[in-house]
Image (tube, rainbow, N blue to C red; front, top):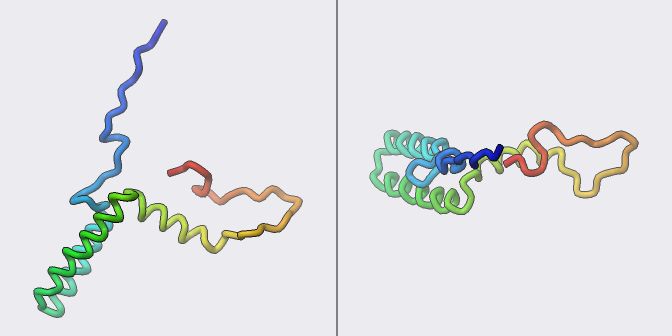
Length: 102
């Protein structure tokens, strides 16, 4: 019995992006920018929010999982050894640090 190929919808494989930016990065940009705007009361900060959003948009267009990759690297950086020592025990990677998980 031959089974027909199953459909994979693109909305399930693409990351969630709002305004060209990952939602958490966009929300942080707006919250910090508007908070500074309310404190300083300068219209130039609104231009700064827009410029930062364009920079984040360019970075997210290149790699939409930029925040996830950076946060995992940030956690793993303390454990990274360029020239690991040989040990008799097997050196297992910490959870979520395997190859090809992203």
